[in-house]
Image (tube, rainbow, N blue to C red; front, side, top):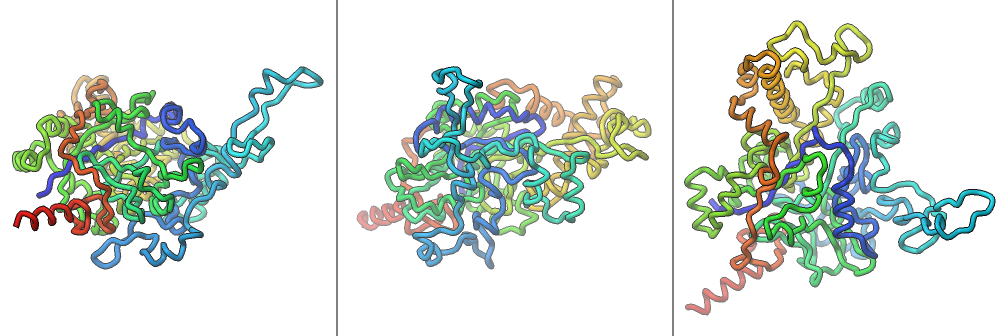
Length: 516
C-alpha cells in the first residue's frame, strides 16, 4: 500500500443557481490582466449545450484524455512521433473562434460618459480586447448558452445525448419538454492528468504533497499539447507572456487552510472541499478497468481514513496527524466514497478527476393519464408510505432530465450509478418528510437504498446545513518533505514511484551508488 494525499471537491448540482458569482470572483483574482482576457478558470455552463470552448466534450474532435490499449493507457492524442509531426500546426487545439467567435470583447462604455448628446442616445459598441477594433461581430462567449438560450440549436451537438434516438433528442429540446441544469467547471486536478502526460518540456506537474496540478512558468515552452490532451480544456495559452496557464486551485489560500476563492464566494453553498487518502499502487489497475466500472474503480482507490492499517501506513510514509484528521472529517470522502452520492465528470476520459458532482433531481415529465405536467406529477396518493408529495424512488426514469443523459456525463454510460445517487437523494427527502409531516420516521425507504438513519441525518447536514468549517476541511500545507521536481512520466503521470527516469529516482540512485 502506498498512501497518498489528494485534495478533492464536490459540487451539488441540485443547488446550483447559475449566478456565476464563482466565475466573477475567480476572474477578478487570477485572470483580469492582458493576455488572459479569454481565460475562465471557473465557468458555469448550462446543460444541455456544447459548453466553453465549443464542444469540449467531443474527444473525437479534440483527442483529449487517455484510451485503453491492451493493458496500457495511451494518450488519445497520440505518441511523440505524432506530436512532432504537429509541432507547427496542431489540428486538435481550440482556436479563438471556439472561445469567443472573433476576439474577447468588451464594450465602449466610455462613450456613454464622454460622447456629446446629438440626435440619439449614445450606444456602447462591442470592442476587441486584443486589437482594440470596434464593432466586431459577437457570435460566442463563455456564457452564450445561459439558461438554455439557443439550446434547440447547439443542444443537437451535445455528446451526452449518446445512445438516444434523434427523435427523442429533438423532443427533449423543444420548448414544451426542454430541460436544463447548471454545470460549474474548474480544473479537475486529476489523479492521472493528461495535460501532465502530454507536456514535452515537463512544465506541467502534479504536486507531491496534495495532488494540485500546476504548470511551471519557467519550464513552459508553450507547446500547447496540454490544451489538446486535457479533455476538459482547462489549460489556456497566454498570448502576452507566451506561457500556458490554468487553475491553480488557489494554492496560496489552500496552503494556509482557506478554500479556493470560487468555493468561498459560492452563493448556493454547493461546493465542498476536503482531503482524501488513496492507494497509489492500486491506481494503474483501476485506470484500466472496463469503462462502465470506472466509477467503482475510482472509489476503490480511495482509502478509508478510519482504517487502522491505513492510518499506520500513512504515518509511516510521512503524512502528518492533522492531515489524517482532515481526511477523516472530509466531506468529499463521505459524499463520493461513503454515501456514493457524488460522481466524477466523464470518467471515460480515464484521468480520474477529483471534482465530483451530485446529479440534479427534476420533476416527473408527465402526469398520469394526462398529456402535460400538472400538480399530480409530484403527488401520489396511492403510495403514501413513500412520502406522498415526492416521486417514488422507482419512478426516476420519468424525470424530466433523462437518466441516460446524466449517465453519459457522470458515469461513462452506467445508468445504475446515477440511479443510485438519485434514489438516495429522494430517500433522504422521503425520510425527513415523514418526520416533519407524519411524525413517524419512514426507515423502510432508507433501507431500500442502503442507508441508515444516521446516514440520512449526516447527508442532510452535509448538503444543506453544514457550517463553513464542515464544508471546507483543509489542513495547512507542510512542504519541507515535499518533492517539487516536475514529473515527466507518460502513462502514469505525476507519480515518481512509477517513473525510474524521473529526477527524483535518478538522484536517489546516485546517492545510493555514492554510498557504496
